Length: 153
Image (tube, rainbow, N blue to C red; front, side, top):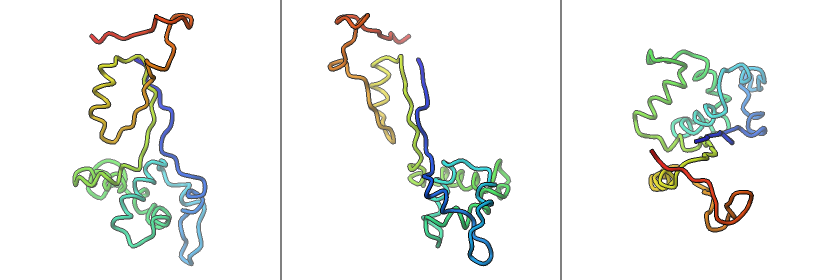
């Protein structure tokens, strides 16, 4: 089996440029957001979660609340930052729809059709594109008839 990450959640350049921290006179401090130790996925998750609970606009959440969540230790005594505490709380509460904005695309090769059937049967939150055995010419040296296959243990 071969699994390779193809793509993942990434902030658009225009959104990234727009969420620099506001200073005390309403101007943006372009260095503050760059100094926060966070990933694009964490910024998306914070935006989605806080959209439900914050008076700020979604486009302003990371700018106005990012330092609070990413720049301080978890207030519940757990590991990581206060953003990590928030993520744990969301998972425990079952409000995980806010995490559906995060995406990952993998190429999975060399698995049985039985495994693919199980993955697609239990597809909550997953999308699949599977190589067709009907339309793809399979064969050794591009000759009809032979193809690679996997036998599960």
